[in-house]
Image (tube, rainbow, N blue to C red; front, top):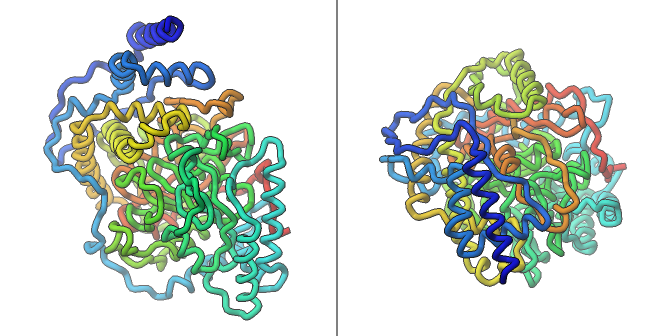
Length: 611
């Protein structure tokens, strides 16, 4: 007993030293603050705070997780960390708005504009426009490239499937292994490809996704694969029921090439997963860097050329962060836009399902097929029909784009330089850029974390009690942290949601979009110990989620588009957010952002399955 006790005391002393002797400047002890209904507590012009916490992996992480789950850790260490990282903020707020527990916004108030063309015609025109765009260098193979091969007879879906199977085998043998697709079945892939080949031979494809390779995050049910959600203990038997989105992809004729890797239970933003069934997915642009998470394998598969479309879930940036780190496009739709029936319900108030794609055009295609009310899913039942009528415009005249420059600039210098030029590009196309307030973003940050972790802890409480030792260390630590949030914290966080949604309604009455960088940092480097134990890096988590949390917390949609690269060749991405149910304006702006990036760099790991 003596060594563990001494180690616990050593950790405690270190934390107290770092917490009090070296306390970060600029974070005074909180005072009780009253929030008046409809009146912002701050102007939104204070720079966001970074979190505090050492990067832990290997033995230090094991030790810290052990201490955190002792009585001493529960009563002394964890409360100290909560206080140091401002997680006690909600204790000091007096908020009078009624809580909003689900950020579902009715679409009745939106005026549906008459469609001059049907959605299919618009998408075909969009694909033709993209295919005629001059491109002398590398470009990702998108849905249009597959369809051209199938329609001309240059390749059949079955031939493409054989190429993908060979690539999947190669992925597993490579050093380091890509670990994008963690479950796949040769017979299943061939069966779907053969059916698609027959349909093209008979000139009766089912949709624009017929014959298109797709992978699906392991958090989403796919027959006959194991529904593990990144763990070593869930999904002990093959799944027997498809999720709604899986069924829709099958009905559209897509070829599901397997299920993709993910951060265990969606509890982190790196994609680091050291357990026996998964391993850590590698970033195709640099395999010594993380993909981002939690939809790590989905982004890696698209960036590596294994498929032009993948599905992920996004509760705190889990589609948009890996898409950004891997240099591809990611869409988080309005809350309730795409059915989450058949997904693991880890966080019911913050999570949306969305596509990761090679292009904005491909994202629009996925949106047109997957966005639909689902009687099996209680949210989004009154959503408007997908509308794309205004996305094919030569310019951006008439659009007002909101930027809060203080918030915008809270990122790495290389990211800021590229993203500022992207804003200038949009201005040159006729859009007007308006300075907008983003009030109470620190409250949003804290409230989002309280909501998502409290809901995850609630759902995973039985697992925490019975499968604790089988969970990754980072998962244990995050769920331990979540146990310190109270009912008071949760209710106040949802009162804050009401306020934040009200502020956004006022902002979107004056602008069409809000612009930000996608992430405040680029993909972090993988350390050797991360592959064995995982890691916990609070500062990186906060920086990767900085621009993501507002969308998850309030339910507004967001689109990330790659716009450049760092000097080291890592992707830099840009985010556009819009009001509820206005995904069309995201696509309109996103298409113009693609024109800003003059070249696309080829990832270090790339499989051309159409070769």
